[in-house]
Length: 113
Image (cartoon, rainbow, N blue to C red; front, side, top):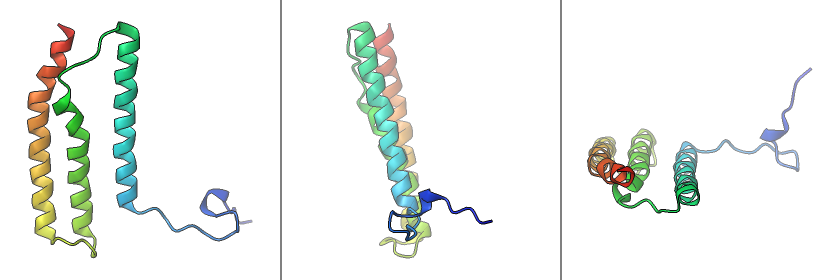
């Protein structure tokens, strides 16, 4: 007996194509930002004060996501840049990510002193 799961099929009975890795990466980036926004609103509701100095921290998910996207794109054939350009872009994004963490964490911790 074969088990046909309903999550792979559209209502008409045809199979859906699998989701591309690029769309999944972008969905995870959106999910991270959603958790951040919920955390910021919850912090305000419980303490009555807003967090400040979060510019560097809020850039981190986007930079890390761009690094992962460029690494994934470098593996694909239809990527407009070459393999080494994708890897260079990923390295620059990781460096910017670390720089944003370096300047963003003290700004975040200044809210709790």
